[in-house]
Image (tube, rainbow, N blue to C red):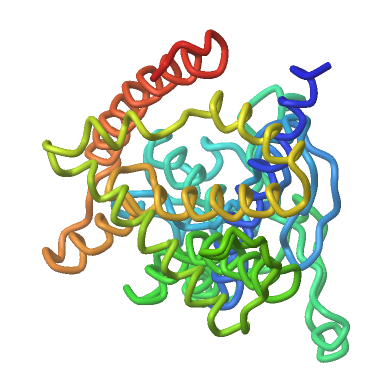
Length: 362
């Protein structure tokens, strides 16, 4: 029973914190007019939900975290055939890559690349398992009541529609993409998830220190229950964030990296500590959730792809160098980053097993 509760507590805590992290990305993207095709509770997979404002909200079977599918974040240069491929697909409603290749006077491979990029943009619907061939469809369009009253047309999925100005159609779709934004807006979207985690933790500190209060031991040995003002609670929260930032920064110092790793925990340790925290009561559970939220936010700022900090560093590099990082280069960087994280995980997992399972880790 203890093992089941440990898993449940860990899934609930980590799932919720990752979910609000992705919620930060979603809110920032939508605030800047960027299309988000999916916002899910759970890891990518089969889902159930509803669609509103062009975004499918739902739940997947693996309720560990969540994700927001922000359109236009694919690396590398855009396909030069997006405009003509988009117009071809809209005119046909339903097409395969051979149809689009003939319409645009390009090769099948070029048509395939353009169509797949349009799928990433949310400007096309990709093939389904029921399709005998790779069939692409123009997305359904459901304008607002005000737009409909003004004469806007509504179209079902895969329905052919007139295209009077191919360039205007392309520009309309492009403006809803992450890659169309200026550097500072892209940066805000990238760090929004981290900001939500840190602000949520600070809000918990305010509740803990200003509303609930904490027990402190005076020099006389007397235990007194005290509360502080909201401003002081916010200061305490940011002091804690600063401590975590300083600790994580120690990973980049060879003299302290080993000590930092040794004092860190993998998901195994977090799961074990989550049950301990919940068993100790509401105050302990809230402190634990706040600390994990801070750790999740700060760790995501590490300049290692595919973390948010790694993506931000790539954005800075592209801004300074005026060069676009290719998909191939980003894949190599991401693989190197994942290899590093696997090494960290194996070391920390071993520590956690020794500490929490065998109880013989100092």
